[in-house]
Structure formats: structure tokens, C-alpha cells
Image (cartoon, rainbow, N blue to C red; front, top):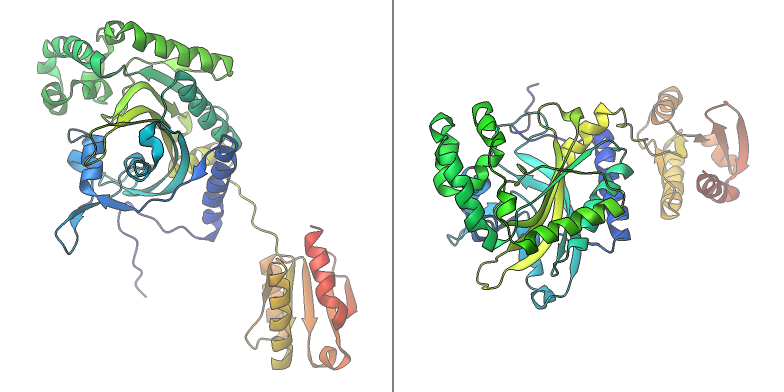
Amino acid sequence: MATIAPPPGTADIFAEEARRWRNLENTAAAVFSRYGYGELRTPIFEYTEVFQKGLGNETEVVQKEMYTFEDRGGRSLTLRPEGTAGVMRALSCTDVMNGVEQRVYYYGPMFRGERPAAGRRRQFHQVGVENVGRVAPLIDAECIAMLMDYLQSIGISDAKLVINTRGVNEDRGPAGKLLADYFGRHIGGMCDDCKNRLERNVWRILDCKQEACRKVVAEAPDYVASFTDASRAYFDEVKAALTALGVPFTVDPLLVRGLDYYEHTVFEVTHDGLGAQTAIAGGGRYELFQPGQKKPVPGVGFAAGMERLLMVQDALGASACAAPVLPVYLVGLGSEARIANLKLAGILRRAGVPVELELEERSFKAQLRNVNKSGALLAVIRGESELEKGVAAVKTMATGDQIEMQEAELADYLIGFARGL
């Protein structure tokens, strides 16, 4: 029989792997809630202008990577390529416009039309947070510390944190001119993308991965020195707070992140376990406009690629996620026993006890094979003779010991056993 694989850049996630995904999500909920964040769920597609306005028309994401289509009314819609713009669209309907802080976290699928590679898919998943409505260096530092706390909690303890500052709007003119003058003198030997970036967005040259361009970038002037005293003081406070929190970091003046909305603090977390693509998380502070609004909304946040987190766990040997324990498997011989077991399973499940049972007519030997395969701790066995006597055989699978128990006592015994695990 022919099989149909999922589209390139996507993947099916079966139960064993899904447990690992759920662990990432549950740990995120536990860690982020300790910092006062609540979950927010937004649509996986938005009006296209949400991303055009929010991310900037000159970004690589908007220019090359978005999945855009029209609805029946001719309105342009886009599958979300990242989480922040949609979150900010949702929060702009709240009182954040009046400076009231909102702390939210999210996780779910994102979509970009990139070339599939290790750790990079067209449908990928992110877990992220946004702290929206207020601006302060200590908020930035706390957000970064929370990210590192989360990574520690999922077993990633040796990740490297890199930070930088993008300054604010009034810094962009002097700093941009400094960079444009420098790169303009070397642009002839740089890649075609950088030649375009020189005119459209000179900051993106700093992020180029081409070897010839990296050599030129390495000698670029210190543009941060042209920032205002206030911008540099803001960054100094972030660094001091991270030091006070015991969060190690390195300052990298070439770190600018790929989206235009960043200002002040930007950061990235890397890990060598990924090979060439070392980034596992990143974010920063931003001011983001929404369609129809004249005033930008400030925020700070980050997103971590969940596929990449799983890859790092694999590299560290921390990928194992224990399967849930199955306390009870019900074995039934004959139709009456199967009905009795189905009723018992309902009682146990309503009491919160996981249980499996055989619902087809199968031999005793075949059912015991399924019990062993399931990993169940106890097997409850009933046939015609047990039903006539009003009893059941309860077998401890690890030892093979078996006892006979009255049917009236059976449910309470199994519930007590499961709760004692």
C-alpha cells in the first residue's frame, strides 16, 4: 500500500514524541506563571497588514517567507510567521494603550516558506512570551532571566546568552549613516543581498551569514558609541541587572535580530548541540504599530523554537520523557465479561484512573500479550466462572502473584492502588 508523506517542511507527531512536546508546553506554563504571565491563544492566520505593519515591509520574513492568500471577500490573510505581531494585535484591544502592563505567554505552530533543513521547518512551533505596555531596563532583564530559567527547567543548562542594544528611533539616523558610509566603501565585494540591504535596510548587513560579508562586518565601526547617553545608560542598567541576577552573558555588537521593530535590548540564546544553526531562542524590546493605530505599543519578549529545543535535548541525552504509568488493564473472556469490564472502566476513568481493556473477542493468551505490551501494573481477569461467583482475579504483572477479590470491593481497591502510585 502506498504511503503519503506530509508536505515538505512539516512532520507528523505521534504519541511518544508528543509527550516531549507536552513537557515543553507544561514546563513553560509552570515557569512563566511564576513570573505572573498568563496564556494567550491567537488565530494561526491574521490579516496580512498585521505582519506588514508590525514586522516591517523590508524584513526577510515579509519579503520572502510568508504564506499569504485571499479569503472569499478578497481580503488578504497570512499564516502567522511569528507570534509577536498577532499577540500585539490582540493586546492592542485591551488597556495596554494606557500603559497598563500585560504579561502573556503562548505556544503553537508558525509558518514560513523557507528551505527545510535540520531544525528549520515550514510549519514550525514556538513557545514565547510578551510583556507589553511598560518600558524599563529591569523588565527586560527579568524577561531574559525567565528565559534562562525555562531552559534550565527543561534540562538545557549550558546555553549561551548574547545581548546587544538597538538604541531608539533617534539613534538610527546617526548610527545608520555611520554603517552606510562604511559598508558603502566595501560593498563591491559583498553578496547581492547585502548590496540591496545597503539601500533598503543597512542594519540587516550585520546579520549576513556569507563568509565574504562576515569579514567586512567584523571590522564595522562601533555604532553604539553614536547612540544617545540615555540609550547607552538603558543598556548599562540591563547588564547590571543580569549580573545581579547571576545570569551570564556576552555583549555582541553584531547582534541586531532580523525584525525591524526591535529597539533597546535584543538577545539571543545559542547552543552548540544544533550544529551550524546554533540559535534556539531570541527576542528583545520593541515598539510595534498596529493597523489603524497612530501610537505604537511597547513590549519585550522572546520566542524559542520548540523543534530546536528538542534537538538540544537529544544532543544532551535529556530527550527521554517517561511514558505515563498504566495502573490497570482489564481482561475479559466472553461478551458478558467484556460488558462488565466496560462498566468498571467507566467507574475507574471517572475517578481519574487510566485504564485499558480488551473490547474484541480474543483469546486469553492474546489478551495477556497486550497486557505485557501495555506495561500495565495490574491485570484484572474475568470470565464466566468469575462472573458467576461475583469475583475477579487481580494479577500483579511484575511478580505474577494473583489474588481473588469480591466484585463489590474491586473498584475501590483499584482506585486506591492507582492513587498510591
